[in-house]
Amino acid sequence: MPSVKEVFQMIDQQLKEDISRAEGIVAVYQFNLSGDEAGVYQVVLRPDAGFVIEGEQEPSDCTLSMDSEDFKKNGGRGIERNGGVYERAASH
Image (cartoon, rainbow, N blue to C red):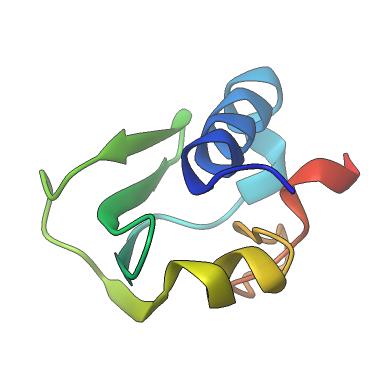
């Protein structure tokens, strides 16, 4: 199972390779993770760019708080093209 950091690196890479995955979404999703791999990550989606930031750097539009193990059990999900919150980062 990849680490939390590796999951966010995969999301970042996928957004940079194909921003159309988040087409029509302009938002900052913040993940407040507790537990063994505690940390704060933001997924930033803009019309012309998408990327991941470690730490709290921008005001968030949606904040999700959970244990890092629960985050990983959910498959390390990121942002879904249809406007939902989750899609397997490793499936694309």
